[in-house]
Image (cartoon, rainbow, N blue to C red; front, side, top):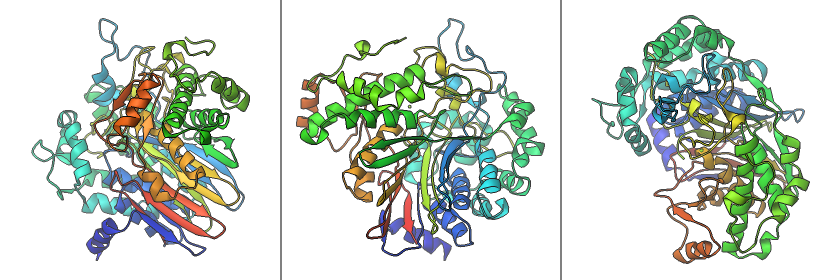
Length: 551
């Protein structure tokens, strides 16, 4: 029966609609994770319990994008009192980390060190965040909410074409780790479709977390194995690093666009600030008067300006001060928008701003329960399969989030993002992120949205918001062609399909350099609710293998 259910899940339409009150919706990047969330809701759990189950299930069945060895942001809305918060489970730099740790003898950044192997790994935040969610917001125990993930780890999940593609991309790094090679490859090669991937060691680690809470991961036997494995392979973790890790609750970034309220991720994510900056600029511009090409030109120019500020100002607010009030103010956005030429691309090196001095990795899910509690969560281990390193006996695939720091001022990370002193490597600091779990709502309509995609996350969420405000349905929003600009490199990135030759030539006439990507990107998961008439829809990106359901 279980296999039949999974098969039917794959066949279900990407969009599911409900016309009754008191229903719940989940959209996630893997059918088994969506199933795990509903399993917990059906046991009496709330959206926050379901978020624990989905997060843990994705750690098992989608090792390409997230895991216990990574981090994430969980944006929460509690229906009973309207309370909203962001759970910051972002990784932290080990205490021995320092500014020059990825430079070679010539002072040049060695990207392999910040991408492959345990030296690339920050201290994970996901296990602590799941315990924090359970202790402070859930109704059920961790033993209940982690049970589906433990079952999946023991029984296994089947290799998909998506898994094959990313395993092939990271095969050399996976082969370099004995445990990763044994778990995720077969005889050193990408597994065949439908190969069963079982993870007994990961099941044991999840069981320790279920029984002991955060101490089951950050102290005791699991912690000893993590640190021993990291240090033996050249990493710098210590037991004290694990013990010291702390989850933070952050006030979300909020703003308005037309009649809608926007609630999004706070630093150390740049998502909320950059989103609000772009939307504030767009509010100053007569977008409805432009044709399709000029509209794209104007949106690109607002992206360029907001990402420029990202590179200058943003980092971990526990270490630096970000001028958030200025960057999210409509007055400041008005001055940015005024500098945009409606017919000519800006020169990135000469932006008229004072003081000038990162897909299919990562994962996102959206949940709303019958009571109206909601979660938008974006989780990551950074690059596909993270650092591709698994400490022996743990089953935990470690992140390579240290690459999200600025290893050297002006040096680009794996997603082409450049940084400044604000995001330089420091001990115990959290690297800047682009993850952007977001709510957008007015009195009648709500959207819960997010996506993976490295540096393109923010602009994907932006385009989704613009489509939502324009009245597009959930399926259309997740399916539409995407474009992106991030200040540097100075190019509009277009998806491989959806943009015609004439449109591209017109953008070039505006002075833009165009890069047509070799493939599509992103894996958006969203939920839309309308009050009058009451209607609940959920959609999973057709670019991925996710499942959205309303029950």
